[in-house]
Image 1 (spheres, rainbow, N blue to C red):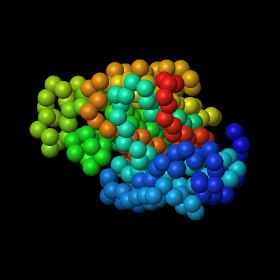
Image 2 (cartoon, one colour; image 1 turned 60 degrees about the horizontal axis):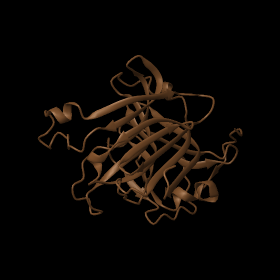
Image 3 (cartoon, rainbow, N blue to C red; image 1 turned 180 degrees about the horizontal axis):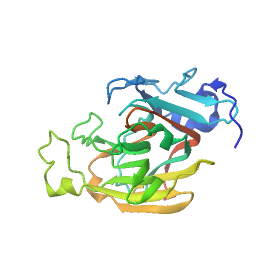
Image 4 (cartoon, rainbow, N blue to C red; image 1 turned 135 degrees about the vertical axis):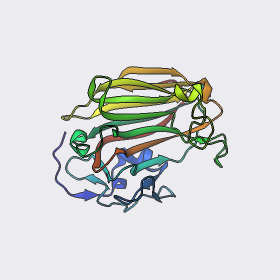
Length: 260
């Protein structure tokens, strides 16, 4: 990896990020704002000249640097394409080389129950582009967790294992489906010295996650086939009293006609 030099450059100036910037908008929060709040930039996918202290490429390392401070706040690229997951001949892929910066240190002042940070997501739009039938749960989150089930400083795949709305207002929260709504799979240890490569592939009613080229998840998502999905990449803080930061050395979105 090349060393950082602190010079902030607009990500649009780097061709290696074209595939995702040209298809995305930026969903970003004000630091330390109300949990869950956000606004949008580059709604037309025109990122020309868009650079700020939370979203930039470091000229030295050529890494896309995203950061955000505050609980349940975000700084994420939202790929605008809402895609079906059940096409037998179309596979949607998000690939990233990502290195979080001292996530354990970022969480040192957070209650232990809140010790996660999300970097990559497959979310749902509902059954139509207008949002009809949306459920407030991602299909997949790739997260760093400080501690879970004896694993320390690990990446996890958090998978919604059904398409049931389990929000507090849904009336389903106490159901058997909601008590067993998630599959939580350890992926690999966090590496503070070099980025980890992730490939997320959705198609033919399958969710595949590869880590450094090795398939870690191959999950049947036929239960998700009525929902449209979309990708997100960046930082989403699920911890309190700290700042999340991640460096993306590569970030690519593509659509394949053959399973990768």
